[in-house]
Image (cartoon, rainbow, N blue to C red; front, side):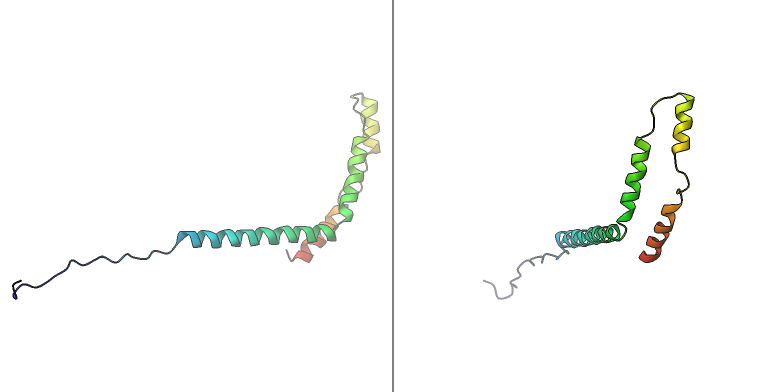
Length: 104
C-alpha cells in the first residue's frame, strides 16, 4: 500500500423513515367505529324515550289497512269519511320536544 493513497470507502445511504400508513389507517378506522357506536347508542336512547310514537303509528297503519280496495265512488267516500285527519300535526309536538332535548 502506498502511504500517499487515502483509503476511502463509499458512503452507505441511510434509509429515510417515512411515517407508517398502516398506523394512520388504523387510527381512522378506530375513530369511525367509535363515531358509529356513539350514533347507535344515541339512537337507542332517543328510541327508548319516545316509545309511544310506535304505538300511534301502528294504529294509523291499521286504519289504512282497513280501507276498501274498491274504486266505486261510494266506497271512496266512505274511506274518506272514516279517515281521521284531525291528528295530522299531533306528532309535531313530540318531534319538537325531541329536537329541543337533543339541543338541535
